[in-house]
Amino acid sequence: MSSTAVHIRSKKRLFNDVSCKSCQNERCLIKRNLHAISLSKFVENKNTLKCKKGQQFIMEGAPVNGLFFILKGTVKVFRTGINGREQIVRFAKEGEIIGHRGFGTEEHYSIGAIAIQESVLCYFSKDDLQEALVENPKFTYDMMLFYANELNRSENKVKSISQMTVRERVIDTLLYIYRKFGDLKGFLNLPLSRREYADYAGTTEEQVIRVFSALKKEKLITAQGKKIGVPNTQLLRKEISEHNYFLDS
DNA sequence: CCATTAATGGTGC
DNA sequence: GCACCATTAATGG
Figure 1 (cartoon, protein in one colour):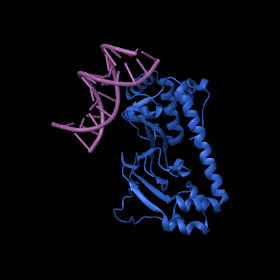
Figure 2: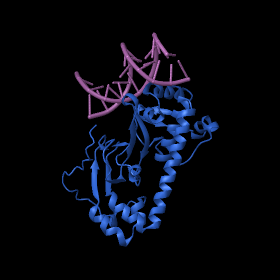
Figure 3: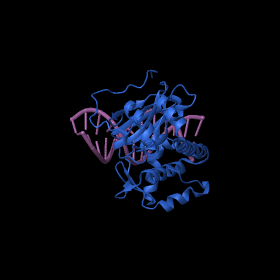
Figure 4: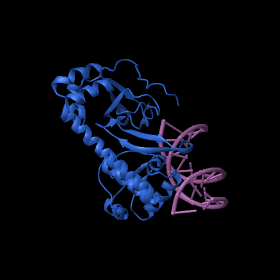
């Protein structure tokens, strides 16, 4: 993987290159915090980029120049481990930030990111953001909450991978997806391959398939191809309750 | 139709 | 108990 900068696809300027002013996304930290004053600068300098499904927009090791906000779509954030195995760090949806770890002293992204659905991303330069953070305490505070939350989740994940069995981790993953993306007509509202479940749970595709098969027999989940249903989250939660761990999205 | 993904079985640590 | 490899079945464009 080259360490070339993230290439912004400059197809043609997107006609819907929305300014933050008219943006509908109320979950966006920037939108929520930057009224009037510093907004104009952001509007000028931000880039909107559209990603097709499967398109990678952050390469591991690429230099950090800014941050991504998800305007629309879903993204998986991962890190490549031993013998090329992907460890999915998190799934991110509308309004979330990608690449924030590179913000501090980090020179290069330690993670990669791929759109798993058609997505629209807003890209802000590090400099602009830094300026805004210095000027706007509320914005900074919200960012801090976000970082704290991420750290909490990350620490929980360490625990889950080191102490839970594969079955528990798979269940944990299902609950995580359910919490975060919800349910649509009885199925998890995010289509993932078993491989992706495995990469998040820290196991192999085969193990996920085996656990799914077992769970199906036990009527704890339902499956129709890629679509997985979790009719009884209480029961699932019960299985991992001794690790009493929960919450956050 | 072919290609990708899912499911199942065997083996070794 | 779990990862890795091999084979076969199912699915979808």
